[in-house]
Image (cartoon, rainbow, N blue to C red; front, top):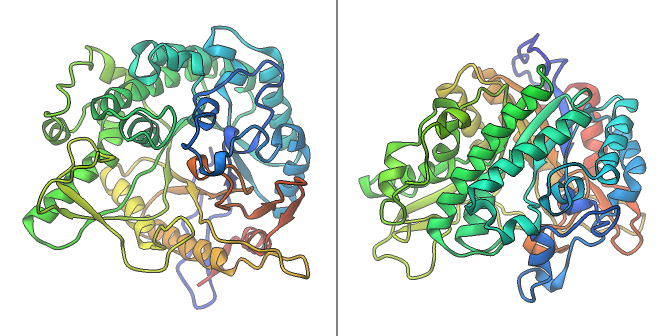
Length: 468
């Protein structure tokens, strides 16, 4: 991890400069790009099973081939070098390294990441590895998945295996990606794999995911004492529709379930008392055992922040009948925030990124930060001259980098920024209908094409900043 040797320069009429050791990166996830789901010993993950269930993924799409990165990683790293990336955040596929979630190591599976890391280093690109980006081995889900405490123990074993093989070269570790999505979308609302719909399970899964994080921190440090360890949380800016007491309380409750229920135990060793009280109708939290919170609070070296759009909430006049993504929150209404929208329907609002970074900095001023995901899906088209003129994405990225710079000027210790995503890819339940990449992938031919945003990002990296 770099040392912040130089604060960002003050804004001028010409440019916003970032520190010379700032990490300029892009991010991906294994199931979204690798393909090769049945090669070299890999077994099914919960996402393979989810995709095979009719009606759960748009147009019946799967990650069976995806962007074929498993076979094309050398060319993809060459594209990273062409863009000028100084860092690349990838995820390791648990069922590729430990088929079925069984103890031990699959030599052919871990060898892929060995080759990838070496390729990155040869290209002068810092490897940042995420251990879990949602692809739980199906056999572990069959035994309870993240609602089973044993899954956290199995994750620690898996972390130790990966660290032993890659720890001498990986420069930043991320234990989990967005455990909120895994727990709330996967176990509470059923929108993501494994597709369960039980509010109590979402809180149980939350605890076991955080326990897995803490155990993985221990395993990483045991294998690599110098390891730089983080976790990527989708911390969000939660705003109230009005300044009424009821609306402000609704924002407090969602902030607790989105932000504080994850970051507080990691940083303070305690779950927020108000969140426990707010969810008493769903769970008594008796799954928290003595010693768990001390494990969860194992010190981290940095926090990864994933940001896309803010939330706008109010108290509902009458409780909703449909199941809420957030447990015990049927009496809260979510509103579309004002402003332009991406193809995902998400509002473009870079002030949310600024506010998230400054809020985390205010609460934990000594915590280094990385923006580990930020990007937008647009309906990209290839012009007759063979270009993808994605000006909306360029405007999105420029505005969010300016917001990040503003947070740094306010004191946030931001060390790097990772665009989501390097490649167009399998966008979970949306299938291949949403394109987030700065590199276009033709899914029929697997041909890659740098979009205008990739050329723009290359110029930003070269200049070390953006136009003000």
